[in-house]
Amino acid sequence: MNNKYLLFCDSEGTIAKNKKFNKNLLEALLCLSRLECKLVLTTGLPYHLISNMYDMYGIFDYYSLSNGSYIIDAKTKKEIFYKPIDNEALKGIKSLLKKYNLYYYFTSKKEEYTSCPLETNPSYTHIDSIDAVEECCQIKIQAKTNDGESLKAMKEIKDGILNEYHSFVALGNESINFSKPFVEKEPLWFSIVPFDVSKGSAFKTIMEVSKIKKENTIALGDSENDRTLLDEASLRILVRNRTKVKRDDALKVRYRNVPYFLYLLGAYIYAKIDIRKISKTLEERFIPIIADIRDRGKINPSELDVRYASRGIVRFQNKTAIFYKEKINEYKLPGGGIKRSETPEEAFLREIREEAGSKINTPRLIGICKESKMKTNFIQISFVYVSEVESFYEELSLTKEEERNESKIIFMDDEKAIDSINESINSLRISNKKSYYIDSFIPRRDLSILKYHLENHDE
View 1 (cartoon, helix red, strand yellow):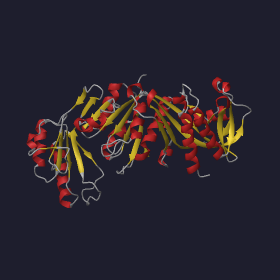
View 2: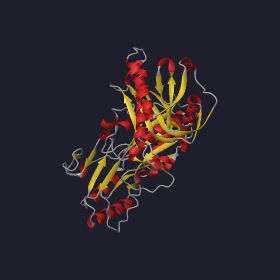
View 3: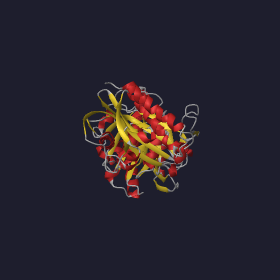
View 4: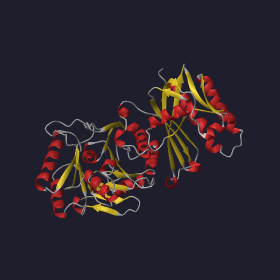
C-alpha cells in the first residue's frame, strides 16, 4: 500500500506527557502506521533522549529533532538533514551566556550538555565549562526564576544574540512581554537554531523526501514553537494542553481526546475522504473509548490488520434494535464495516438501513469500541452511535450469510437485550466452534456498548 498522507506529531504535550505515551494513543498511532500514512515525530530534543521511548514502538517513519535542525529516517537511522550552528557564531553566543545566571543546553546529534545541576536534571550530562561544547545544532536558554532580574537577563541575551548573529532564529513563546513580570508556572525559555531551520522547514523537507502532496498533510502541535509546523500543514490540529495558543484556523482537540481523534482520522484516510472534513464536534466534548476487548499477548506491528466499523444503539418506542441470527442463536447490535467511500456516520446509516430496515434520525456519536485480537494481529475500531427510528422500509437488505442464518431485527426491552446477548456468550462457550476465538469478541463488545449506553444515556 502506497503512503499518501503525512502526519507530523509534536512530542511532549501533544502525543506524550512526561515522555510517556498512554496505551490508547500508542495503538491509535499504530493503526495509522498501517494505513496510507507516514508518521513523523517532531521534538526539540536530540535523538539520544527520545530513542528509548520511540524506537521500541517502531511506528514513526521520520524523526525531526532539535526543532528541525536534524532529521533522520527512523527505520534506517539514515541522516536526511543536519545543520549545525556556525562555529564562529557559537563562540560569540558562549561568551554572552557566561555573563548571565541562566540555564542553557547545547544540543548535538549525539548528546545534550547543560549548565543545570545534576539534581535538577539528572538525565543530562553535566559539564564544568561551556567551552567544551563544539558542534551543536540548538541552544536552549531558560531563566532559573521568573523574577525581574532573570527577565532582564533573558531579554538582554535574546536581543544580543539576534542583533549580533543574524544567521540564527529564536524560538519560544513569542507572545511574552518582557516589560511585565512573567507569571506563568514554568520559567521563561527560548531556543536558538540556525537561520531557515524550524519545525516548519523540517515539515517541508520531509514532504519533499516522501513525495506527499500538501493537501494530504496533517500537523499536531500544542505550543507557540509549533506554529511554523502548523502553518505548513493542510489539516492543523491544536492540542489544548497546558499552553494557550490562539489559532482560529486550527481544529482544537483536548489532550485526552487525541487517541479518539487519531482513530477518526484513520477512518477518513481508510475511506479515502478529504481529511479536512473531519467533524469539529471534537471541540465540544470528550469522546470515550467505551470498551477495549482484548486477549493476552502483543500485536506484531509489521503484520497488523486494521478494520474500521460503525455500530450502535437504535431505539424505537423505548426498545433497542437487536440483530438476531436465529439459526446460530446469536444476538448482536446492528452495524458493520466502513466502506472505502463513506464516513463512519454514513456507514452507520447504511448498516441500519440494511440490517434493521429502518430510516433513523441523525445519529449521535457516543464513543468508540476497540477489539484487539492478539492471536490474529487484528484490531477493529467501531464508532458507536445512538439514534431513533423515524420510519421502516418494507424489507431488510441482508448478505447471503445473514440470510442463511435466518437473520432478523427484534426490538427488545433493555434488560431482555442484555440477557439475550449474554445468552450468545454462553452459547459460544459450549459450541466448540473452530471460530470461537473470533466470534467471542462480538457479544462481549456489544454487551459493553449496551451497558455503557444504559448507564450514560440522557433520554
